[in-house]
Image 1 (cartoon, rainbow, N blue to C red):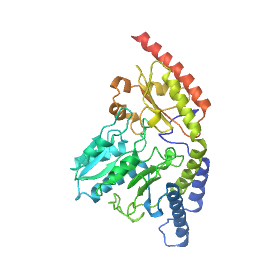
Image 2 (image 1 turned 120 degrees about the vertical axis):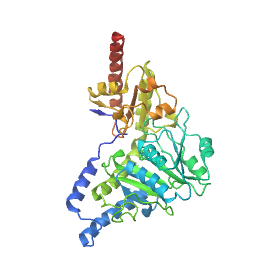
Image 3 (image 1 turned 90 degrees about the horizontal axis):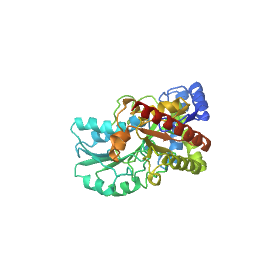
Image 4 (image 1 turned 120 degrees about the horizontal axis):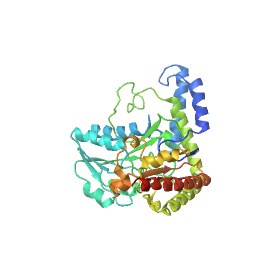
Length: 383
């Protein structure tokens, strides 16, 4: 099996699974309980928070545990809107955000907030001049993802943060779900106020995530209840998920330092090989993109047909994001960079992890070329 769908989810590290089993079996008490057993579990949560804060180069009390990227994005966006609605009702985001950002903004629009969707250039990046022009006196939040989940395009987060730092009323949220462990981001240097991370994107477990909230920023909770996470996110802590998330992040950072160049080599080989195929159009621009995501279209074919043909060879890729793939709609991201609908219909996404190898990439290209040729022959025969 060749698994090239790591942006949808990654395989948990063996160490993560073993640690989860140990924590679940031996430290199952509620960390909010008053007794000593609960206190030991609370200590584990505290240690995990401290480890994650150290890896992200932030303070312990700026780390809030969530269930993942979708909750983190909703909490940052809606929590800011609720907290600062009397200061302004304008939010700026982009046309290429993940559905958990886009749909959260659309829901706020239905409640009376004004949403501005910034365009992107042909590389998929936001232009700073467009952002500056969109800012109003009523603007309270800018939400821009670090690495696009479909194309891999890296947004100029540090430059955006420097610009927004001139506006004291505007908060800055970054969806860092696809960037974490692949493209470093210094949250302090980039003047980020909120940052979303999800464990299952870096070989942790599903159902665990992080929302970084800069000290001094207030936010309205979306859940009411037991006042966990400093009253920001009520709900009994997922201790096993939290502890193993810290372990997964530490292991991923170690892999990044050791294996990033190899991942870049595999990415470059795949893009070079894809561009040689006459009916393939590569959308990802390597010079402005993360090392693990490649988006291309099989011209004249539907992306899901190519995905299922590769699946028959035990090679797993995807079309758009996992959250959107079953809807079979044309990618908003590809439309935003000017890809025509007929070409966008053939979109396929490859996403790598540090576990993938060059041999897998070579097998993939051999199988893909054969599949494309056969599918095109069938199309010609039916015309």
